[in-house]
Each structure stands twice: as C-alpha cells, then as structure tokens.
Length: 271
Image 1 (cartoon, rainbow, N blue to C red):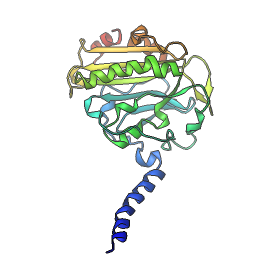
Image 2: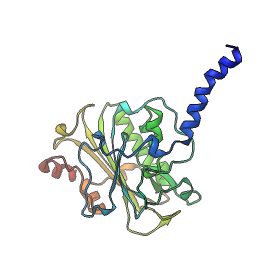
Image 3: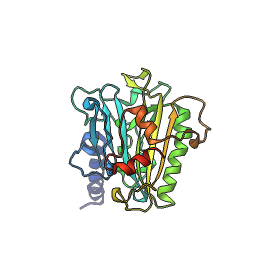
Image 4: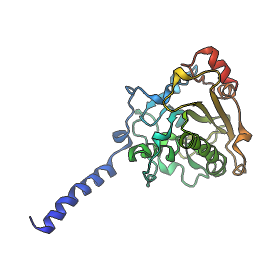
C-alpha cells in the first residue's frame, strides 16, 4: 500500500466520525430515556398540582421538567461530585435545539436568544460536566438553559456555582442540586421563551462521596438561594440571597425532596 493511500486510509475514519458527529441531533446523542434509574433525582422528583406542563426528560447528566407553555424548564435536577469533572474542553458551537421534545412543542433555537439582552444561562453548568465530551455537550442543549441577565449569569450566580464546585472538588462532597426560575410577569424573548423574574437553586449536601438518600438526616447541610434576574447585581455576594426550600416551594408551587422522610424533610425545608 502506498504511503499516500495509507495516510488516506487512516484519515478517512476520522473524517467520517467528524461528519457523523456534526450532523447528529441532540435526540440522537442525548435522547430522553425514562428507563434510566437516575441518581440525579435520588431525593425525589419535584411535583406540583398541575402535571400537564411537566414533560420529564431523563438524561444521564441531569433530569428536568419541561414546560411547553414557557418553552423552558420548570426545574433541572442533578448530582454533583468530583467524578463529573475532567479535562474535556468546553463544547464549541451554537447551543443545541432539543429535538427530543414531543411533536407540538416549540423547539428553542440558538437564535431565539440572539440580541435579546439575555444570556443563555446554564442550569447544569458546563464545567460541572467535563468528564466526557457528550456530558459537556448535554449542558448546551437549550432545555438546560434559562434567560438570565448578564449581571446574574456572569456575576453572583456564577460565584454560587463556583462555591458548589469547590465543595464537590476540594472537599469531596456529594451534592444533589435543583434549579429553575420563578415567573410573575409575562416577559418573553425569541419565539415565546419565558424570562424568569428570579432564579433559584437549592443544594442538599451529603457529607461523604457515595452517600445518598439513606444518609440524609436532620443535620444534613442545605443551601438555598433566590436571585433576582435583573441588572446591577453582578458584584453582590451570593449569601445575600439565601432563602429556604420552603420559600422556594411557595414561590414555584413545587414540592421537593419527596423521597426524604417527612419529619426530616420538614426540618430541611426550613433551614
């Protein structure tokens, strides 16, 4: 075999893989798989009284409830520990339309956010899924994104994300995280993507890596924040926006930690 032919032979599979991965859709790479026994919702799926706007998407990287009227997630849930972090480079390219959504749902596009004045704000942060390329790509699917002001997304929200990452990476903690938005007004961008008035996040910290539901006690550490989605807060300290799970439940209509025993849940809800 000639050197030229041999080089082409080696190059062809690489080219083929590149072309294949370029044209795969989100549903091909990261389908909604309800059969997943997901660690991301080990403490329970959040529930509310109206399930008609809760289309649950299960991915290895997170679980979320999608709202077909608002065209964004009601909430996103994920586990975080050191094993989710790696050396994979941040995905480059447009944010990804979620083609796994059912027929009749509007499928948000990258361009819906363009020139809107709002960032494409990750719920599951890109850095928190860097073990594999597919894991990182999952955070760029637009069902994991909420419109956030630049001051929120790049400032106080980011600082709270870094605080959480530090617990997972430097302290070896096991975190179970839920995040989403609160909607009191009807502001939208693009083709009807609702803009939250506030964004919330709550963290249940189980002390040691590998611990889970059975290890949650009344002494388990909980962090909850509710941050206004406005300009002018970039330099604020995240602890200025501390709140409780109970207050988040009141604002969103969702009940959290459904698999935690009620006596323990009642204590954690008010921490």
